[in-house]
Image 1 (cartoon, rainbow over the protein chains, first blue to last red):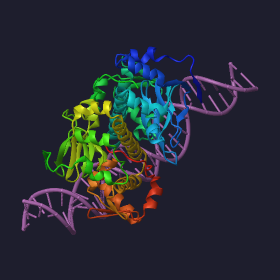
Image 2 (image 1 turned 45 degrees about the horizontal axis):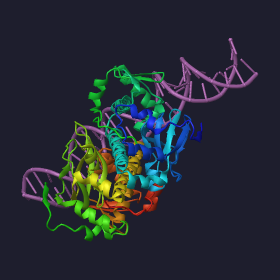
Image 3 (image 1 turned 120 degrees about the vertical axis):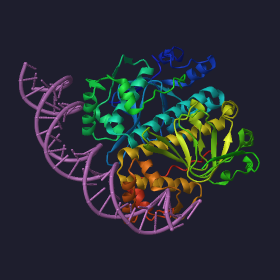
Image 4 (image 1 turned 180 degrees about the vertical axis):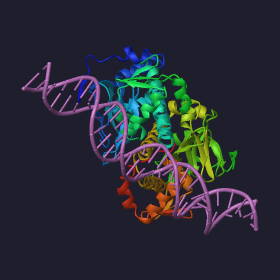
Length: 251
Length: 251
DNA sequence: CGACTTGTTGATGTACATCAAGGTACGTGG
DNA sequence: CCACGTACCTTGATGTACATCAACAAGTCG
């Protein structure tokens, strides 16, 4: 359960970045590619369970997820934990820390991860030299804000069943964008405790809620695989809308 | 309860913007000032109670608040409402709508407001010509994200009393930055229904919770004025930290 | 003045948390 | 192979924080 060393060898060249090949991500101009390639310091591998960004720490780095899942969270002194959002391949980590000098949340890996590490000091250079990438960063920040808005609505005003259905639809549609689903199935590297801490519920009540959704034929979640057995039904009960499929930037 | 007409006369010239005079806001370079002044199309006045940004509408404009308070919110089809955040002078409105073409939330005025209106089409020009302003926009987006993180933690994991205390501390410290407080007092243009919809509570329970906090000597809230009669006590019970007083951009 | 909004309080109901116990699967070391 | 520990899931009993319902008081506005 640790954070690996910085790797520069074996590092994926940005020109061959596997994420770029996904339909959802827009392609780079030569100028953008050149900057990003020079911006990337190396790669970092993180073991499952490792917390690689710490609330209150100021040594904030700037990452992009090449592979693996993680979650952002905050805790209260007595241990209560709130998961804020999940971090999937193509997502940006550490913007807050880079702009405000100190991260107000932590990030923990749900699976083994590979991160692209960037020089935080050069972010200003990015803004002045490659405005199109600066624009992309803002786009990603606005998208994160939208997800938080939806999440807040769910936790504040939805019932337990609606919340769980909403979370599953949300994660499923994000994984789908990345080609990580098969039919109505998805490997979910979460425990019910994660779901509980995401939705503001207790562990036990989360369990009972999941069972109820399963009994209603909405979902099935066994041995790490989630099946949306009635995706439309779940959509209806939560008014879930997939995000508009705008072409999405990466970095 | 309506949205006023666009005004260009009587408009405050950006060089004399009253917000700039506040210690908290950084000052403009001549270049920044020139761009912002040309970026500003005019001013808009909005009456109290008017919803001037609509969830799902695509005619998203780009505003900055010159004066007045508002709140961002989302609703479910059956009427449940979640207030996402409050919008105070110096805040940016409509970034999501400008980048994503469609706003996923609504904004309603809590008081009469004056907004500076910008040309949304020229935001790209801003990014390419004045990167320092682009950086500021990202800063504001990251700050909004931080507030949402805190809010989510409160709604998901705090008790009712902690939530109310947290909200009051939050609003008080934001108003304080703007010089809108007097001692431990603040004019709050909210009803208890707003507090309830912010914190994921019912109206009645919100009322009882406020009474309990008042009975404990933490706060007083009478005829529109909030007094933090024991700010340190409230801080302790919520672990509230004022944001680091970084110099803050405006636009 | 009545109509309406906002705040307040008590009675009752329920969704959720907490507590307690046990079950299954999977690992480890002997 | 078994004994043991641990992580995760499941279920029932009980407790409580919160929602809902109802009624009324006080202030505001036409």
